[in-house]
Amino acid sequence: MATLEIRDLHVSVEAEGGPKEILRGVDLTVKQGETHAVMGPNGSGKSTLAYSIAGHPKYRVTSGQVLLDGEDVLSMTVDERARAGIFLAMQYPVEVPGVSVSNFLRTAATAIRGEAPKLRTWVKEVNEVMTRLQVDPAFSERSVNEGFSGGEKKRHEILQLELLRPKIALLDETDSGLDVDALRIVSEGINRVRATGQVGTLLITHYTRILRYIQPDFVHVFAGGRIVESGGAELAEQLESGGYETYTEAAGVVP
Ligand code: ADP
Ligand code: MG
Ligand code: MG
Image (cartoon, rainbow, N blue to C red; front, side):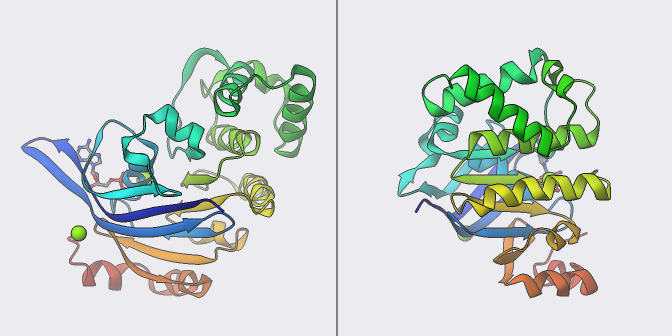
C-alpha cells in the first residue's frame, strides 16, 4: 500500500519585498485507499500544498519532507513525481493550445505507464470514460482547456484521473464552478477511482457540498498554512454550521 507522508512542510514564494512563507509546518499522511478532505478559507495555502507536492517551481520548500513509500519526493522532477504515481488536478487548469485532448491523454498515459497503451483498447477505454463523464465525443479533438467551460475543465481533470490511475490524487477544488449535475458526474468519477481502493485522495475544497457525494475518511481544517484540526466526516458538518472563523482566530490568521 502506497503512503504519502508530509512532514513539517514549510514552503515560501517569492513575493515583493522578499520570500513569503505560506506553508508553516504541514503534517499529513495519506494512504492508498483513504480519502482526506482538506478544507479551509481562501488564501490559507491549500493550493500551495498541492502544487508543492506536485513540484511546481514557483514554490520553494524551505524545510520538511514529502515521502512516497519512503522515497524523497522533493528531490524528484515533476515528471518523476507523476511517474511515481502522484497526480494533481489543478484548481485552474492550464490551456495547451494546439494539443488535442486525445493526444494529451495518450502522451500522459505513455509517460506514466512507461509504454504506449495499445491503440484499440486505449480508444475503447477513453470512450467509455468519456461516456460516463457525459462529455461529447468531439471533445477529444479540441485543444486542452482552450475555451473549455468550467465544467469541461473539471471533467477533463477527472478524465485524466480515471485513465492515469495514480496512487495519490491531489484534487484541488475540483468542485468549484460546477453546477449540481456536473458536481454529481465529477463526484461519481472520483468515486469510481476511489472504489478501486488503489488511490489515496487529498480532496481540497472550500465548500462542504462535494462531501455529500464523496464521504471522506478524514477531514482536516487548514488555516494560516497549517492543519489546525483533524477529525472524521462529522468535522465537515461542524464547519458547515460554524464556518472557519473559530479556527482562523485560534490560528492567529488576520482575515
Ligand atoms: P488557497 O488555495 O487556500 O486559496 P493559495 O495556496 O492559493 O491558497 O495561496 C496562499 C497564500 O499565498 C495567499 O495569501 C496568496 O496570496 C499567497 N500567494 C500564492 N502565490 C503567491 C505569489 N506568487 N506571490 C505572493 N503571494 C502568493
Ligand atoms: Mg514547523
Ligand atoms: Mg486554492
